[in-house]
Image 1 (spheres, rainbow, N blue to C red):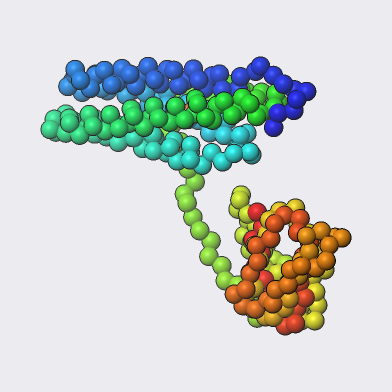
Image 2 (tube, rainbow, N blue to C red):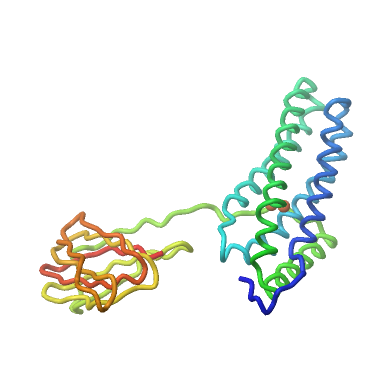
Length: 277
Ligand SMILES: [Fe+2]
Ligand SMILES: [Fe+2]
C-alpha cells in the first residue's frame, strides 16, 4: 500500500490503458463490419488482430498487475471475465472456420460477435473506471515499478512470439478423512488439514483433563467441536471478566473475532476443527 513518503505520479496502468485503446479500436472495427459485411475474410483479418492483442494484454494483467494488487483486493472476478473473453475468441474463430461450409451460420456468428464486443467493452470499462484508479491510488512506488517491469517483460515476449491464450490450472479437490479415534499422548496437538490462499483448516485435539491455555489470534477463527466434551471460554481483553462460556459437544461451534482472548478445557478428549482466515 502507498507509503506517503513514496507518493508518486508513476502510472502503473499506463501501458494497460494503451492496450485497452487498441482493443477498443479493433472492437469498433469489428462492430462496423457487422452491419455492412458478410464476407468471412474481413472477419478473419480483424479477429487475427484481436486475438493476439487480447492474449498479450491478459498476460500483462495476470502476470504483471494482478499478483501485486491481489494482496489487497481479490481479482477473481476479473480473472473469470478473462476466461470468458478467451473462450469468446475461441468460439468466434471456430464459428468463422465453419462459415465457408455453412454460410447459414452467419447470423449466429454475428450475434456472437455482438455479445463478445459488448462483454469486452464492459470488462474494459470495469478496469478503466474501477480497478486501474484503485491501483494508482493504493500501490506504492515500488509496487508500481514491479507492475511496469513485468508488463514490459510480457510485451517484449509477445514481440518475439505471439502469446497463447491464458491457461488455468485444472480445478481439483483433495478428499480427506478425519481420524477421531487416534489421539496422541500429547495434552494438546494440532494438525493442519488444508491450507489454501484464503484460510487454514486445522484439527486440534485437547486431551481429557487438559486445557488449551487462554490466548488470542490475530485472525478471525471458526471452531467446531467434532467429538468429545469440554468448555470454551473467552473474554474481550485481559483486564475483563470472563464473558463467554460454551459447553463443547459434537456439532457445537463458535465464530471468534480477531484478538478475542479464549481457551478450551477438555472433560473428554476434544476434537476441534479450526478454520482460520
Ligand atoms: Fe482484464
Ligand atoms: Fe484489461
